[in-house]
Image 1 (cartoon, rainbow, N blue to C red):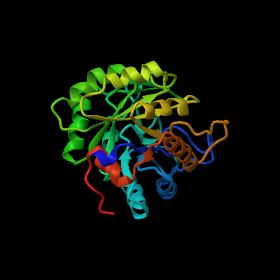
Image 2 (tube, rainbow, N blue to C red):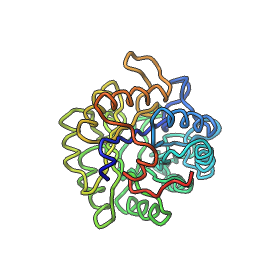
Image 3 (cartoon, rainbow, N blue to C red):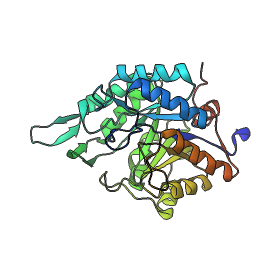
Amino acid sequence: MSDLAGKVIVTVAPTGGFLTTADTPFIPTQPEQIATDVARCHSAGASVAALHARLPDDQATCDGDIYRRMNTLIRERCDIVLNNSTGGGVNGDMVRTRSDGTRVVDWDARLQGLHGGADTCTLDAITAYVSSPVGEILMDTPPSRAAELAEAMRDLGIKPEWEAFSPSHLLQEIRDLTAGTPGPHLVNMVLGLDRTFQNAMPYSPRILQEMIDYLPENSVFSVSISGPDQLRGLTHALVLGGHVRVGIEDYPYLENGEPAENVRLVENIVSIIEKLGLQPATSEEARQILGLESSDV
């Protein structure tokens, strides 16, 4: 592992489950667009792609066939590590309405995200209301369902990527569900969504350090930050030995407020990595760091 010292995994999150072309002209939403965009980002230094699928009308989905088509197209172009979302989004076939009128992210729809052939999948072991353009929507994930999702991933040979929005997620669900399981445990700490996800945390140096202090043993951590604090927070994460995520899903703007293509966002963080005397990891190096099997590409 010594030859991996100073290597940083750059994850690109090109689409997400919320934004549309009305928000930014550069967002890719369909499999061919996403595959082309991800390949450009891979050439610029990204070694992991955090992917959301969209329906033909650009609304959110975790449809396994759409994920598989997207993943196949990406693998034809590059060997980037593929991470598929099981959170989906707040519209499309991801949302259903309960008898009491509460709108919830559909559990069965989330499970479909496991069937796209990805290397890793996000595991949001959280229960929270999401404030969306269409109102409040509940992501309902009691501990039993989080355990079910983790077990299903492992049965399929998928490595869970735990997403933590606050210290409590690390001290409760993630701590409990990683106990007794082999590492390295992949943890993405998501900050800056405090105005979107109930109980999520903003970025501050103290909050990031506290969350790192609560990581399970044998963890590999990455940080994604939404909002104008992104580059400051990601630089802090790099200094603390972490990996980083950028992309239109997290923050679609350059420092001057100009909308940016995903490849520009990757190039910017790679420049910071290199100025710190570090290097972006290749996809194969990322696989070694994350404890994944080597790619056949």
